[in-house]
Length: 360
Image (cartoon, rainbow, N blue to C red):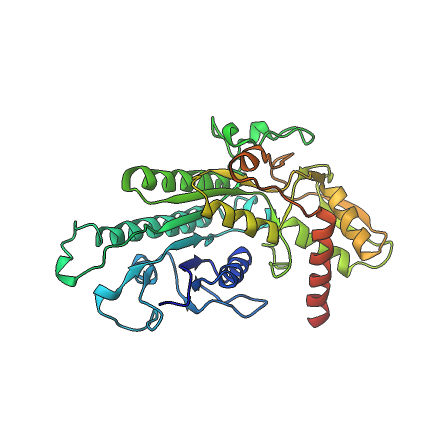
């Protein structure tokens, strides 16, 4: 009998959320294969097996979604009759970044092409693999086992898909799940996220693939990108404050009164696991309802750093004027709510980023 509870495939396992999900699944007794273009940047992967490759390549995806048993691995050849689907797939792989990457307009085509291609490859190759277990492809001569499960796929969507017209008031944005239509995201990144969640729902309706869909709201924490242009606001602010001297000013895009909510990574992972263990497909918000302005975010980082920090407001990409998670649906369906305050999460993130700066 296997020592492992289930098998899981984590796509985007070299990234921030994906690497944290690998750790969580391993702690729960899963056999985990991680896949990405790169290994995690700040820590060793805890995956049982890590495969580097390009998920835009359909043939690579075809191979990587095949579980070959604990004694086999991605690089070993085994008789096809021993190949099984994974119990769960977590799809975090995407072309993404912070406002400095997403909202300039310079990367729109690349973002849309890369992310849509990955999602279509994952769904279509899983559909084809599933068909080898239902008699449609004539695999009976291979003595294929009768499975008592279908691979469940999690898709990490984004709050960027919500309509811009519902997020014009920084003090009262509307991000309820049922506010998504009529659709009008403020970026091509948001349009891609909206299309892709509809793609997953279509494969669920037409091909019976079990899916779970979340709309993430600004996930942050240690071991995430903190410099280079693709970092999210909490990491960027923590970095700027860490480098700043007492009473020095840091640059803040716009007037700083645009609002957001930010969810600490551990909370995100817990909510995602609850969604995967439930019968609820989503889409559902996974975020915090502790809305703050960017100016307040700077003040929070300065507080945990013990510094007096001034603000130099400059032009820059801003996104919508206000955004805040509405958690009514996830409380109703999953009984989940966030527990950690923004200050607690920023404190942990600031300490970690300060350590990275000291190493550089």
